[in-house]
Amino acid sequence: MEAAVEYESQRLSMVAEQIARRGVNDRGVLEAMRQVPRHCFVPPEYQDIAYSDGPLPIGEGQTISQPYIVALMTEQLHLRGGETVLDIGTGSGYQAAILARLARQVHTIERYPLLAERARAALAAVGIHNVQVHVGDGSGGLPEFAPYQGIVLAAAAPRVPQPLLEQLSEGGRLVLPVGGWAGQTLETWQRCGEVYDCEQVLPVAFVPLRGEYGWKGHEWQRDE
Image (cartoon, rainbow, N blue to C red; front, side, top):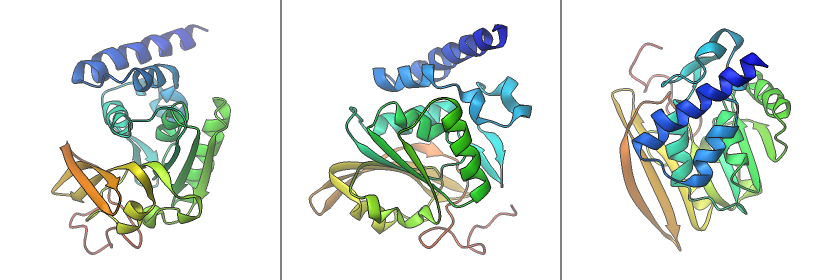
């Protein structure tokens, strides 16, 4: 019980100090960040610092994103509760858990089977049942469940993948980092018919997107 109270206190502080103070003000997003237990989505050795202001390793060379970035990317989707959302790069499952509190249905896809299985277990453990976890190359989206009112991509793409734009519904929004190891920008794209409006949000740093529409090994110019 004491641990649960301490984690809740850390979570409330995280939202107030790391997220709201930096300008995220969507009430639904803030409440989701207050409610979802982030410590349940990190390896046991990192649970004591689960609410720290930064990314944490989760295995397979991947990370759980900084809480502020999770909140910011979620806010950019403008979710109101009835949407079907695609989360690319499941990782720990934390981003999907946040989305699940704000959308009707979440499909999330992860290229590493071990991470996908861990995410399924974590989501089930915290009582989230409107997330379907898939294993595969998410760089081209998940067309069988399209269209999506929101798509969020948690890895840096060399350019916005055209299939993701095409899987957006009318008015749907895609949030993703674009760039390489030397520099990336968080972008938000919105579909208006066959036209896609793009807004550049802020500089970010993500692991590379791998797959058909991502970075190939020799292109990501850094020793990993």
